[in-house]
Image (cartoon, rainbow, N blue to C red; front, side, top):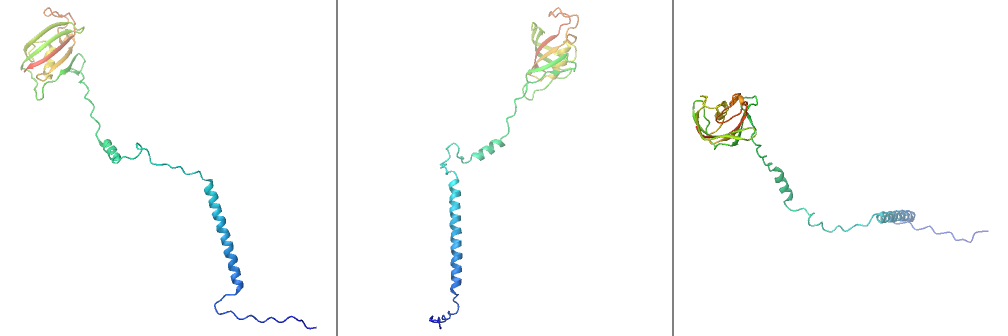
Length: 204
């Protein structure tokens, strides 16, 4: 017996350039999948941000911590400034003969440009003579003598040529450059006595 179903009419052909319906369904499925992936990524980003500690408001830096204009320049200039020269060390003793038995130390230097006397020149000194224990045995405010003529003890003859006019110096001398084993009666100097001489060269 013949079927009662009516044969379906063939569908009308699609206009040129229009894709079939099956293609639209596939594209819709792809778009839905991409949308779900984007939503998942956004949720993951939100979860990551929620795990971070809350941001603190640092505010303005304290006034003392703020960089002051010109501070670096001042520090650089301060570093470039030369260090102050050290104070000159006090003059040490001059070992006149190199044996430690006759030494000279300047107490008051002579004025700038002053000269030194030479052998054979007449000089005037202010002399104060003391023993090693500090006992003063002689003072001559105006002692005049000729250098190198043995008019005075060797300690004076050897030390005064190393002084400037106007200079005051301390001279320590062993007895061999003073009065030796005999000593002296006037002024009284014991035998073998070392002496301390404070000498001021007044004129030369």
